[in-house]
Length: 332
Image (tube, rainbow, N blue to C red; front, top):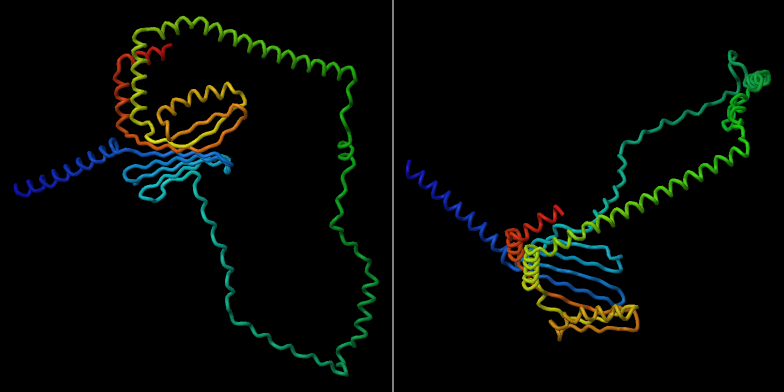
């Protein structure tokens, strides 16, 4: 008996170890296996943007794209082992085939009995009157009866005179001065209502401005606290860490852009110079200060791991200065 109990416990322990191993394997795959992503955009005659992400040797794939020809309506697709799991927009169900016409039941045709031809005898029997006498009697009866009038279906039943008179009666017209007085009063009331609403909005804007002016000093005090400075520094450090671990490893393409205002073109070129410093050979950005234009194509590729987000969230959550700043911001 003891041997059987030990054997059962041994099997249960092996199963438990297998389950724990599988859980750790899945957890390691989720946290440390990289998710590769690709982003491609093109603008020539028509514009289109597409993004693709895959995980664990493309077991799970996600695809997203926009096209100018389709009024930039978003499309999304999720696949597992190559089989689609979720699509936006969903596929339309195929229409059912038209039902076949019902087959006529084959039944035995009823045989019609042949009608016996009536033979008119040349001499009528003495009991029956001759046909000419019967025809003459039917004509006389038809002439004696008065012609009955058949009702016409289009004819409408008459309406009572009292109802017709009541329908034709209209309310008496009021005097001209009374109507003018009522219209003037209505216009004056609507004008007073609009003026009152405008005055209430002006007063509300004034109260908002006074509230912001009164809290300006409080906001500056909140911003310049030493604890909040350390919290802002910690957040900026986490943002830099996220960019370092998830920034694209490959960017290539060429872009020609320009705005109606040359000053805006110069500002955008200054911001784009940072990307050119990181990828000087593969990315070409050319400004056009004479016309408003946007043409070109760009390809971005990189990798990211989930443990980066988990690490950032844990650091932010357990940082005392960030938690203190968040609590005070909720009360502010």
